[in-house]
Image (cartoon, rainbow, N blue to C red; front, side, top):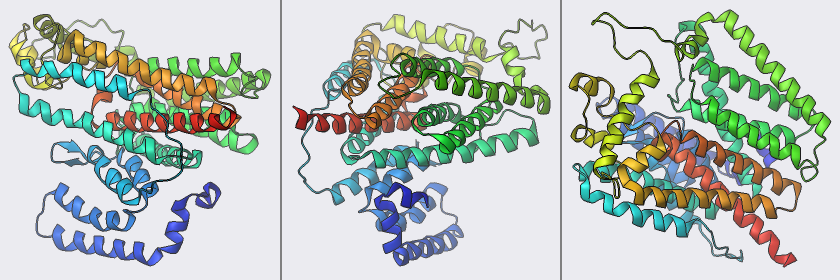
Length: 471
């Protein structure tokens, strides 16, 4: 029903290639039974199981892109990378295999120049790297991100494709959210579901997506989207994560303010909007009250953030909460920056080279700093690539926001305006979130950011092409 509603190539593919898909399932099952019994490593076995599906779907980049969305929620490691990091390779291969030069007008994308500047700015940092090989391996995360948003930016040419990707992401978020809530109720512990700790950012992205969709839709669909948003928010509470509320609140304020003050452009009645916000807020408050009664300890970590408990016994951990532990990391990162302020200590190298810059006692370093990243994207970029790299990164980041804002500013139809505002709000969230985490530079979150950028590029191209007849 949903596939028919979206009118995407995915539906027609499954209906016309049912036997081929069934054959892929059978072959993958045989691989799992035969090779699983001989003790192959998990990542090798996973690649073998996925190979038949890739061969079936290789000429359908829509399906491959949806698979990439779903793989965001997989913690599975392949070699030293999350499996989703490698997903850009089959997507690129599928795009090349299925690519047909068409009559689409070529549109110059304004973020590639700043991206090149950023790449040039980080090269000098490798001169100071003590772990050049491992740093280069980590840098491949960023290379995969570039490949992902470049391919998606060219493959996605219709809003129906964006809708399908959004539906897949929200659906996976709902599944993981259900896992979080069930595990939280059963264990009374801090849980993140099968996606892992990155879910705290994923669910915020899903909340923004469902919020903007709720304002676009009407009647029953809006009610369902509001209920989904409340459910996702409840699952976020079960993760007991504090710092995500800053970027989530900031991005939602940006989104709602834009809708309120420019309501005519979005065909929104301010009175109804305020009523909807009141209903949503009431639902969230009720959810918080209910959860606090069912799971009394769910808000303990929020209270602990302000705790001033003194540790006296030497057997107890000296560092009592996340803020203090991260201060140790930030202190070490700042010391590293001071030694190489202009070009940095080497891109993606802090977690390997922090030992060379520590000034804190060794037992604190080993327990709270060793092997960890700076935890703040801006600090990570500044420490690892210096003022030069940070300047390049800032130029690139601003260019992505400017592209999103220009898409919104020149949008004509209501559909274009809502998609543009939603995409820009997601980018605003990422920028705020980078002040509390550096996960957007690699791994699962990094690939999610690249998918958002890819969709932003595609949206910009769609809108710019729509302007040409009016030109």
